Amino acid sequence: TTSQQTILGVQMLNHCSQTNEGKQCLKHEFTIEKKLNKEVNINMRLLQYGKEIEAREFIKDMSVRRRLTNQTIMTKIPEVGGFSLSFDSSYINFADFTHLDAVDEEYTEEILDVYLTSNFPDPPTPQAIAEFTQTTVVFKTTAKRNFNGVEDADYYITCNHPAVMETDKEFKIVSRVLRGTTPIEHANVVARVHVSRESDPNAERTPVFFDLKDDGSIGTTSGDEHENDGTYTTTISPDQLQIEDGQGISVMCNLVGLNDGVWNDNNFFG
Image (cartoon, rainbow, N blue to C red; front, side, top):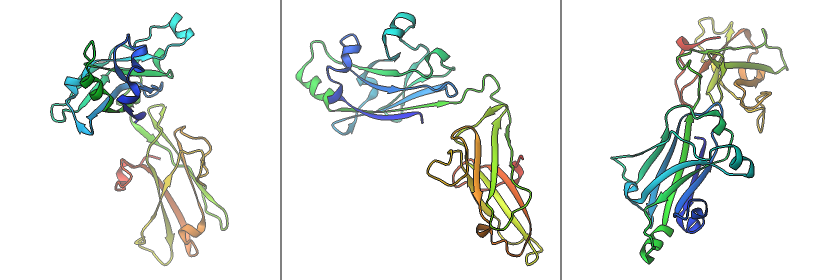
C-alpha cells in the first residue's frame, strides 16, 4: 500500500469543487514512486450515513491530476492518462481506478490528486447536499514494482557473515536481495542458524531463526546501515545461541512469503 486515507463529504463540500470546474467531488492526495509505478490501483469504499451505497450510482467521473504549481502549469499536462474505472459486482460500494501499464516517469515523485466527481444535481437540492455531506470514501492506493521488462527475472539472495563466532563478540548476518539486478525492498528475510555440538551429533536440536531488517537500525539494534536499500541485517550474540559446547556454526538466509511462512531449504540461494 502506498497510501490510505478516509475522506469525509462534509469536508469536501464546496472545497474540492474549487479545483474541479465547480463540480462537487472528493479527492485524495498520493504519490507514485519511480520504482513502484506499475499496475497503480486506487480502491474506493463508499459509505453514506454509515451504510453501504452503490458506487456506480454515486460516481459520475474519476481523474488523476498532478498538483498544479506555477511551474507545472506552464510546462506539464496536469491530468495523468491511462486510468480506467471499474466496479465490483459482488461488493456494490467498492470501485477501482486502475492504471495497468507503467505510469510515465514524469508523473512519479510528484504530488497527485485523485478526484471522485459525484452525481450531484444542478441546482443542488437540500437532500443532495445532506447526502453528500454524510458520504465517506476510503481511498487506498497500491502499486507494483516496475522491473523494466524483466518481470520473469529470478530472485537472488546473498548470505554473508563472519567465518566464526567469537565469545563476547556480536555476529552480524547481512543478506542482499535482488531480482535480476534490482534491489528488493520490503521483503521478509530470515536467517536459520544451526550450531553443531558434541552433545548433538545427529543435529536433532532445533535451529534458531532470526528476522533480518532493512531498517537502517532505526529503533532497533539490527545493525543495518541504510534503510530500504535491499540489504537486510541482523546482529546476534553468542548468548542467543547457547554456544558453550558448540563446534561449528551454519547460517542460511531465505525469503519468506508471509510473516508466518514455513521455512523451505529448497528455496535457498546464497
